[in-house]
Amino acid sequence: MSILVMGTVALDTVKTPHGRKEDLMGGSATHFAISANMFTQVYLAAVVGQDFPEKHLRFLQKKGISLTSLEKKAGCTFRWEGEYHEHDLNTACTLTTQLGVILDCIPRVHPTLKNQKNVFLANYDPDAQLQFLDSLNNPELVGMDTMNLWINTKRKSLRKVLRKANILIVNDAEARDLTEERNLLKAARALRAMGPKLIIIKKGEHGGLFFSKDMISALPAYPLETVKDPTGAGDTFAGAVMGYISRARKINEQIIRRAIAYGTIMSSFNVEGFGASRTAALTRKNLESRLKLFKMFFRF
Image 1 (spheres, rainbow, N blue to C red):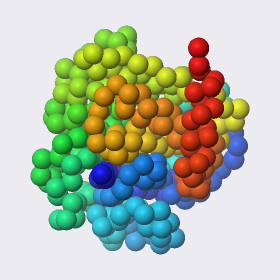
Image 2 (cartoon, rainbow, N blue to C red; image 1 turned 180 degrees about the vertical axis):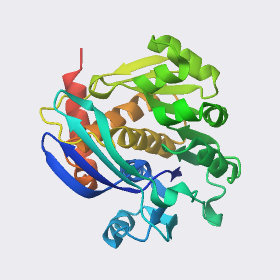
Image 3 (tube, one colour; image 1 turned 120 degrees about the vertical axis):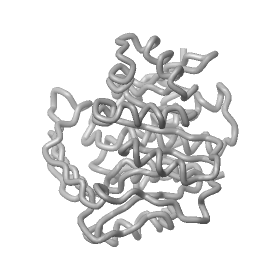
Image 4 (cartoon, rainbow, N blue to C red; image 1 turned 30 degrees about the horizontal axis):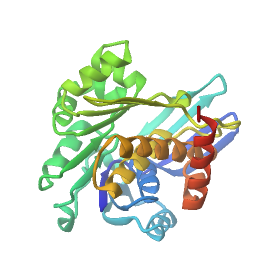
């Protein structure tokens, strides 16, 4: 089985207590695709500008990620610059944002992929998410992400996308903002009422929570001594979760628990390096070794 992801492919400039890096390959769809690719075939739908380095495209293709739905348009690639401070590595301070080609261009799916059954709408304008989803022929599993910007500025459009989704993956602040509930149990219940019946709430260094009609599950984060760059950790988490579920071809309690565990481990690798440098070189053996340690840490 495979998965189609729609989102941003970007160039990031990041500053953390561990240094500053310019023009890193980033974007919601990029981090998702690299992570999901550990488990299943990934088709990436995005738009980049003429300035996007060919070496990054070659890297993605070498990883086996399909770029048939990635378009290069006249103009500049979406660029983001952010900074993380030592006292709060969970929150990025955005310094500059240049939308570039994504301001006027919506990712389009290649005609051969219109029947794709598994789809993930990574963080993007909800109007574009909705238009992209409507171009597909009845996908069976739709996962999605969003952010506070869209919650605050395009709530009506976002609610339309939520009604079409099966799985929602958001962080705790986004869950609270979207539902106006401080308690995460109440927030999850409210989110399920909006459409998606499977809710995963990310809590950064404190792990994650899963909610469905019949199940509540929690997993801690993998303990790390050094966090170099949290950028893309949430997208990496979502990629592993959705990639594993797509490969499993079914959803039950055991599959969900294992998918969230893989998401936790993949995101733990992501934050150990700048951009996608750590996950780009990751092997399945590395992943399974850390998962084994994770199980040992929290056995009781």
